[in-house]
Length: 351
Image 1 (cartoon, rainbow, N blue to C red):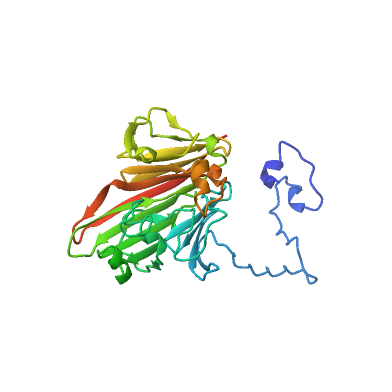
Image 2: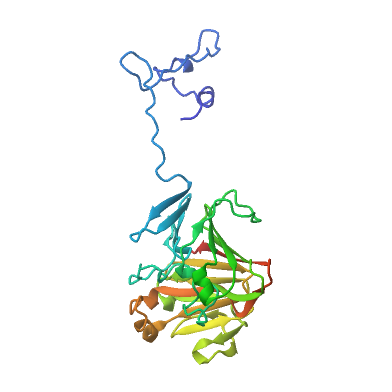
């Protein structure tokens, strides 16, 4: 209904009998409106007391702690209609979704939830190595360790007021020192905005008395509609090493990278922003990296998939790994030095 003043006068709308305030007195002046009674009244004519509001089960911003079937803590970050689930096993993001898009990360239906084995999918943290097996653990040991929540993490620059975040910490142990004899502190902040932007910021500090070098990869499994309907933009003219051809170096020739067979490449010292476009789902995942010179692109295709125990034979069709990485030239830290590397994932919807 419009305000009374706009219905009185030129429109000459006939007054409604229940509302005395729209009638005029003999002087032509409008009398002051009488107080309106509540539309909902009790038997005595008094307004009913408001019913108490129930607390929001899932408030707009929250971090919830739950346990998986193995008793390992998981943290569910919620911000508006976006959420991310993080396991303390490996500090691994295993779910990232929004109300509009649904799930955005791939998690294999054959994933083995058997600690300390890493789960196939999500975003495993690969440290201190990737692919090579100096430590005896494929892709390093960080993804197979239980991390802890750090309540009072050292200051991290940036605006986190509108973000939900959690700080996790992994320190070197005697067990790790037997396979990688260096002392370190690895801090990871995982944050989520109301728009669903997921950010991972790693800080690795050398707390040893000698230098050490390491590789670091955010091994990001994206969920796609069909690998044949996906393309990556932003890698044109970039150099890459082909792991399927004994790391021979090539230059990306096409305007976008599409998929028709197995791909296992390291794009070296490449652009900091790439876009993964999914034609069928009509969405684009934008990947931004900082402090990470490389991008690893991997899809196992048909033959390789059949040799991976925790991956379904046809699941290669719904997954694509596009990883922010520092692998070709390992990072070297002197005692007391700290390295920082960031990965940001955001979504663009297409009409």
